[in-house]
Image 1 (cartoon, rainbow, N blue to C red):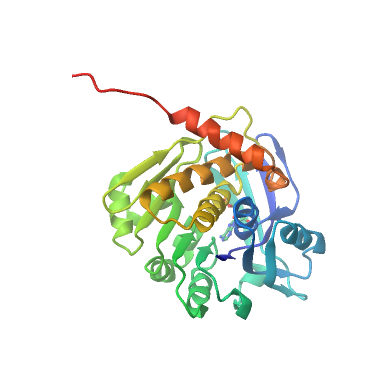
Image 2: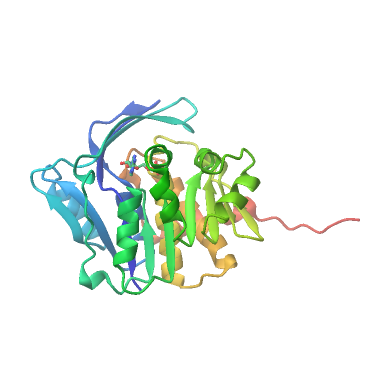
Length: 308
Ligand code: AMP
């Protein structure tokens, strides 16, 4: 088994109703990799950073079994920078700054030792870069999961659609599903998006959970009601990391197992939002994860018999 992760490795500056951070470690691939590390023994990263990216961040990724051989370091460039501000309900946010920096002309190179990849996570990134990585693999992975966001719908819809057509699972949030499909009803949106190519669609609804669709079935997982939500940044990526990490470890791609993977993804996302940035995803124990999963099971389990 091997999991290949592509996505941004970034500096984020965040503002939520509970506080503000200056440039901290962020990026879609960072959250995905940290989250997946609780399931897979090893993952491989393809991304790019600038000369301003501290070695201690790379050490942190390596400590979480993330191979950084495919992380290009552009000594003269600056790391991708994103700044976001959350509204009071924490379900919506404004992107204040998106500086592509080294991402603007990033040419991904998949190292030879990554070629055994069976599970590919195309984290949020320039759609043509996502496509280039997929095209560099000599054997198509068993499962390709892709995440994206409204930014790429606004600036490069044409290439985004080409990439979406090639993947097995697409994960997006509810407003992005509406933007991509032009449909308000998520059921209708799902139908249209599945017709674009993927066999599965996951629509993330923040504190209102997540929906998993395939052509004939739909599954809903709630989000865990939490007392403390400090910062939702990276929750979607953390979800994706837990989802694909669990699938890569169990190697079962049935709809039933995807449902379990959605619960694992949701459990990991519930940790992510409890602290700023990646802080809560560092140093979780196996027991922490298992206890959280049990809370999910308890939340949704009901014995019911139909009364006529
Ligand atoms: P999420 O909250 O799951 O949507 O992910 C937030 C992460 O996505 C942050 O750490 C950002 O660095 C990263 N990010 C923000 N904008 C973009 C973008 N346009 N492309 C790729 N990654 C982004």
